[in-house]
Length: 113
Length: 115
Image (cartoon, each protein chain N blue to C red):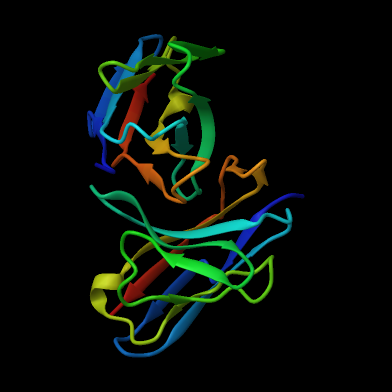
């Protein structure tokens, strides 16, 4: 019940298009859902995060949509740019409880010019 | 500059030769963790530490040891490395506020090859 399932494994989008990455979780104790962005040769860095008391969070071109009843959440990247090309990880966390941040397996996004 | 540092960044070694990967953070964070990243498997937690002298196993602890004698340092020890420990390793740290863990900051990674 600790898993976070992420899809697709890889995604190719044209510049200006919308990139969508989906995640599903099983552990209802998760109370924090971050997305991390990782560029080649770098460590992951927090991109955007959401708590289950809201259905959507937007920061610039990046939006998280959250469906608590379906236990699913997704990252939308609007007007995708070549500089967005990176690997994206979703995660589930129980910040006040279990000390493990559980990651999805990652999505490699390529934005073609 | 607030950061998590790891050394070495790249290491090629042979089976059975003990090695240590160091991790240090300058943000006074209580929580530190080690992950390994493998293609198709994402990030998997090896060990974590909630504070000095407090450590616990993550999802894939076999073949690894850690220690937390100082708040800023969290070394990862491979007593007898094997080829299946060839991987990209990340150290991470985070603070805690009112008992809740905050955003994790990751180091730059250590690419380990065990021959």
